[in-house]
Amino acid sequence: KAGRDLTADGDPWIRARSMLNVDSHSTLSSGIHDGSSLVRLAAVQQLVNLSRHHPIESFQRLLETAAGHSDAYMRWKAAHGLRHYPASRPIPPVALQTPLEMQR
Image 1 (cartoon, rainbow, N blue to C red):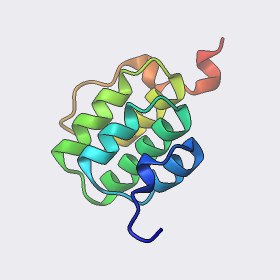
Image 2: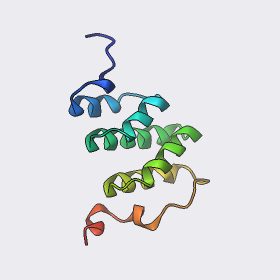
Image 3: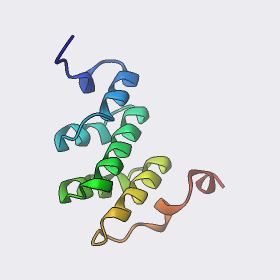
């Protein structure tokens, strides 16, 4: 359906793919709190993409939230997105480890 909000679709694969096409703070916030890791990671990746060109404070706050998540890969992605914000809170060292290092 044209105009349908696919970020609210029942299929996590569709929600994840649609996260890569949004720039809404509220939608990306929902994405980083989604029950599916696919959706959460896609939302963080979109925040990183947007922050590269438009580092705005609301995106920084979402990346800081994601950097504190229990999912190691999500923390890692968020930490790398925070590079675009020199005034951000210090990044926890564990967030900078690669996911492979975290498994050791």
